Length: 121
Image 1 (spheres, helix red, strand yellow):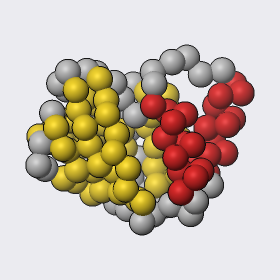
Image 2 (image 1 turned 120 degrees about the vertical axis):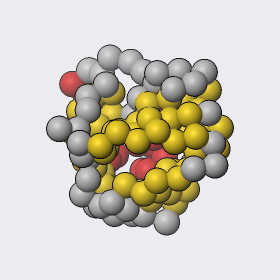
Image 3 (image 1 turned 90 degrees about the vertical axis):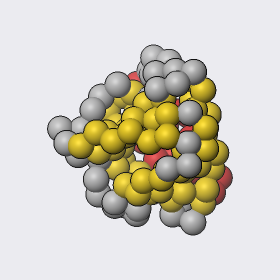
Image 4 (image 1 turned 90 degrees about the horizontal axis):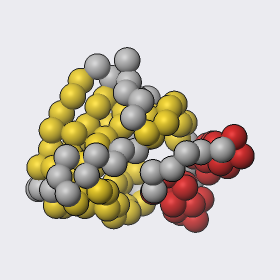
């Protein structure tokens, strides 16, 4: 199990993704909206939510700064960190970026389903 702290700016989103293992999100500061399956959930500081394995999800910062802890099983701490760095900043992804992201994600049982802003159906 690996836990990383993530900082997000207002309206910054993670790409739509799914894990082969559960992922727990714990909000340390600010407010976060989680989109999972067809559900929408708002979390404030001190609240947590578990994304069950196989459920597509993403999340968006709703305040100026959001800090959260994400805990998930990762096969390789180094490649998990590389995955998080690759999705850390909002930017246009080139086809090469998308291919690299898929490699980092796949090494940790994560499948990226869409760019930041894409919501689960």
